[in-house]
Image (cartoon, rainbow, N blue to C red; front, side):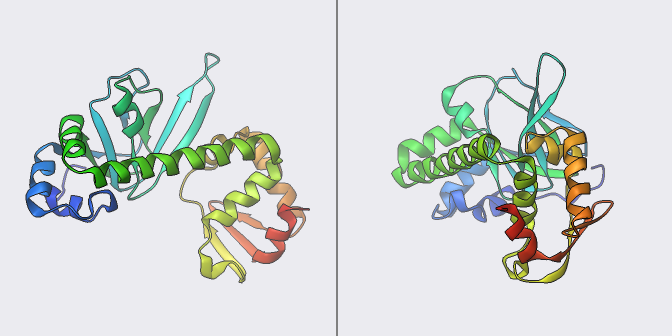
Length: 232
């Protein structure tokens, strides 16, 4: 991002749920240990094995967390969306990153230094509870993912993903157009599927009249019918 407006880090921090309740003085102290990170699509934020000196908060854009097997196969662990944070657990363990982070689009992030976080943890027990709640939520989602990989078919995983991407107001609609925000290859890896298997299932769902694929756009003629097919 060559041309961009300067940001007010303290203002951004004040709008992040994790820091709700902090006074302006506390936010000022936190902002001194926070720096902005801007990157373009394809840029690496960090690689597996790099030292961790804090955690990131994604202001806008998308970031994928992944690792690569010895055979060179990439596994996408998570796709970070606007407002989410990542890296807290590794920061507390004082270990190197176990995944790599790469921008999927133009991004603005905040990197909060470990030192200011530890100072705040010592001062405010409510902040401890918030950080624990955030990490617990991440762990719960990870367990749901493991359950999905273990017990659900590829078709169920894909339908579940599509349903998750819909707005609540669309769950009973017809002729809904869903535009995928990330590549099909990234989605396939996130769902623990090969890209070929992912494409084959999309074709099967299309042949059944449950979806219609047009590039990154997926038309769902009847959302309830698609959802019902997930448990068939």
